[in-house]
Amino acid sequence: MASLASMQGAGLVHFQDFNAEVLRCLTIPNVKANLLKESSQGTFTSRSVGFYAGDWSEIDKLLLRGDAVQDKTTNLHTENEGCRGYDIILMAETVYALDSLPSLYRLVKKCLHYPSGVVYMAGKKHYFGVGGGTRQFLRLVREDGTMQSDLLAEVTDGSSNVREKLRWSRITSVLLPRKVSEPSSKIRHASVAHAEDACPSIVFLSQWGLPVLSGPSVGGNRGKYPRGKGY
Image 1 (cartoon, rainbow, N blue to C red):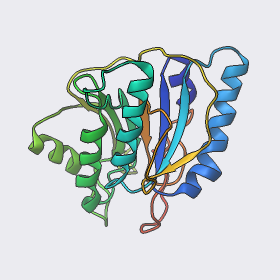
Image 2 (cartoon, helix red, strand yellow):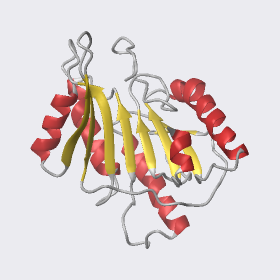
Image 3 (spheres, rainbow, N blue to C red):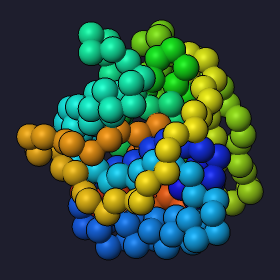
Image 4 (cartoon, one colour):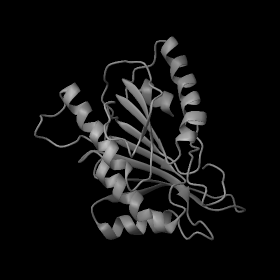
């Protein structure tokens, strides 16, 4: 998916995971392999690819700081204007734990570009034993009342958990083409005091430990729950 986003003109693409090891050992090698292949074929158009490690309750400080730096360097905003935020947020298997849903929703609201940012989410309708699910997350979104949600698809096979693909946003966004540069493998942590790297158009939020690439599988969390299959 990172390769596809780059080919479509995404200015910057960021991957986020709680564990830096997941980014370092799985995500970065796969992303580099995909993007360098596209670059050799003359189809890679993204400005940069970044990797961020940290908890959802804190990572927004790092992401938004980087976004403000990017806005100044690309003249997208004046110095008095706020952060631009992400045009698109993609996430899968991120809503399994009920107690983490408020932090996830707050993070998305802080980092999503208004008014045109859009979120695409894939997950199971119910996660038995841990209380989360797409239904619980949608209830949180609707109770807040600041965003609208749409069910794009429901996947059922009669023998496993029901999976849903959803979109929620103010209005649909578009990707704006920007300049080309080499992908960076530096991992940024939420505890870092400064973030000089430019911020993105897209962020991939992960919770289980697998990178988002050509398919919709996503990954990474704290090891509190057993590893499951990607969506």
